[in-house]
Length: 512
Image (cartoon, rainbow, N blue to C red):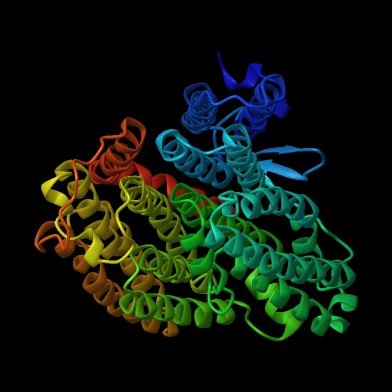
């Protein structure tokens, strides 16, 4: 069936499928509130996320959101409040993949947990908010989608009610998240006060018109943009709004740490890409506020990748190391926003999007390996992981793939995504020499990350265990999710060309 035969609102089908899946899970819980049928609940969540993925891939292959194709192209809904284009579909695919991996792994991880249905419902609801965020084209719908993502996330971090660390992490995450939401929505009000618009395209039209009223309110607009950057920096765990991430990731169930550090981060970045490419064109905004907003992202990128990697290098707790490492990767992706004022900046942004996709595979897999270690009752330090390869060679081989890929070691997908980001940044530096500093910071921090990633590989494969372990269980769901993530990380190599082309085309279309 051709896409054209579907009602226009069906363009949001990837997000609507997730919303429907959450309602089905609520229905199952209401019918049998004390159900412990993990297979049924996890199966519904997995089927829903895979269905969302299938539809998003189908729409992408059919040309929905692609410009220059007769009878297809960008679809806007509800008077332009939502927009389905290549950018939205690209990130819907990332979110659906991560959600599927996390829900598969959770089947075993939650074997003795009381709140099974609530857990899966909250995961799928948060994924719904992330997918809606990818398609939002108004500051109002963006904020609603942001809250739909955030509120379930707070509960998920604290869902281990008998674990003091989980509850404490959830409370800290909630308090800092509430503050960041207040900052973001206050920024929205200031932007509305300066431009009289909330829809992203209308804001850009006002700025490009050179309206004198906007010029008179340049300070108000500049403060509003700064607050929006602050709210986005929290969602992407960028310095200095990163303090919640190590605490939340360490206290949360490990599959939720994977979900937040991969899917939630991707949602934060699609929000940043959408807002700053659509609503605030660089030239017009610079003229209105007197400052190039990309400079803020230059500073954020350098500080975030540096603080994240140096902090990760000092950790003894594996989960906290991965948390700080995810902050470092946020710094790499911020280069895509920092380069938008340069000629060829859309290619840098496309390379950053490509890195987010590969990062979704390898980072999710790494946290799910930690979930497997927690399932086994292994401790949390590097020493506790010593010699695990003797009893779990396949899982440890997958973890080695994740670590080397995250470090950017060839020939894994992480190397090629970083290489593409580096080369496009160097090319754009011909028009903006400050990008050379970003390219150098990317190389230096990637080299540093090899130290702490290889340290974990050494513990798994070379070091002798400090304690004799009993025979380790082989949980099917966790193993399946970890191996699937490893396969996707490796398969990203032969599929790198088409995936990179899709990312670059999506970025070029939205920037144009």
